[in-house]
Image (cartoon, rainbow, N blue to C red; front, side):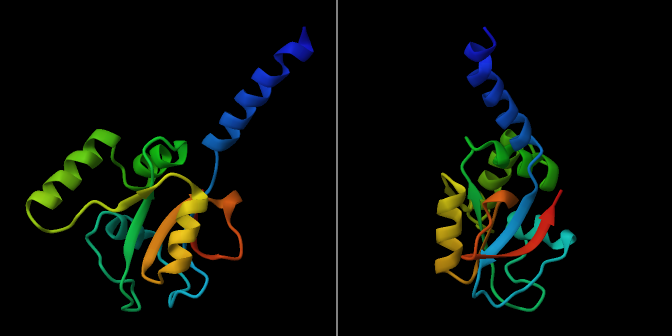
Length: 140
């Protein structure tokens, strides 16, 4: 009986571990910025800041809404629910101030995007970091 329940237990464990994942704010390894202050993250990801503190241009990218890390990022970093964020981006687009950032289906796609464009910044699970990206900030 215990062996039969093992896949379910492993799935639950992976969900619990994922819920506690650290968020890495990342850019491509060759991007002209090495760090970002915690208080800069929200304005960047809400389209209110278009430059890093060093003056380099920045454009955020998001994980898709189906990714569990997206919910954690939205609620803990941006302090917005999915519904609030959709309303926010609708308002920004309607007023011509900003368009909603592009969404990618996985950390692998985020890494590929930021590695290929030095002005993009994204976020991934810190366990997904590799040599293609540079971590600007880790959020616990």
